[in-house]
Length: 223
Image (cartoon, rainbow, N blue to C red; front, side, top):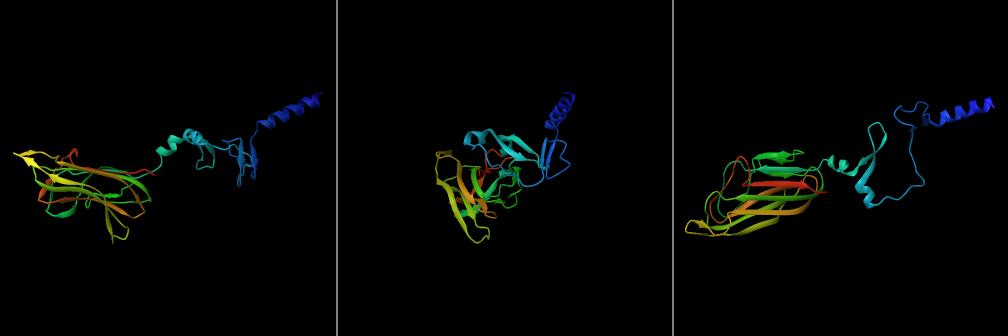
C-alpha cells in the first residue's frame, strides 16, 4: 500500500512538471516547450468575431500568447502624415503648380518631403489622401486644387482627384468660397508618389499660418 502511495505521488508530481519535446531543458516560463515545427491536426475553425477579439502570436522567445486584435492593429506601422502651409504661397496664372506644404505635424514613416511637398509610399497599399487650401485675399477666376499620382520612375503623372470652379466676388465680397478641398482613395505601389497642385486663372496667394488650419494635407494608409 505504501509503494502504491509513493508511485501515485510521483505520478501526480510529473503531471505538473515541465515537458520538453525535442529538448531536455524546457524554458522555465512555460509548461510545454517544443523544439521543432508544430502541427495541430484537430482544431476549431475561427470566425470573423473571434478575429475581432483576439489573435494568437509568438513573441521573440517563441512563446505563444493570446493578444487582443486591437493591440495588433495599433502596433502595425502604417503611413500617417499631416502637413501644413505655414506662410503664404504664391501661384502663377494658368498653371498646375505643386503646393509645398512646408511643415509637418507628424509623419510616422518619414515619407513626406516638406521641401518639395511630395509623398513617396514606402509600402504598397490603399491610401486616403486629402487636402485643403484657402486664398489669402479676394480673387476672381478659375481656381482648382488637384491630387496627382506619379509612378515610381518619375516619368508619368496622373491627376486622380480635383475640385475646381470659378471664384466670384461682388463689391469686394466673396460670393463663392475662398477654399478648395479634395480627397480620394488611391492604390499605390511602393515608390509611387503623391503631390498636390493648384490651378489658377489669375495670380493668387494661398493662405498659410503657423497653426495650419487654412491650408493643409493628410495622407493615411488604410490597408
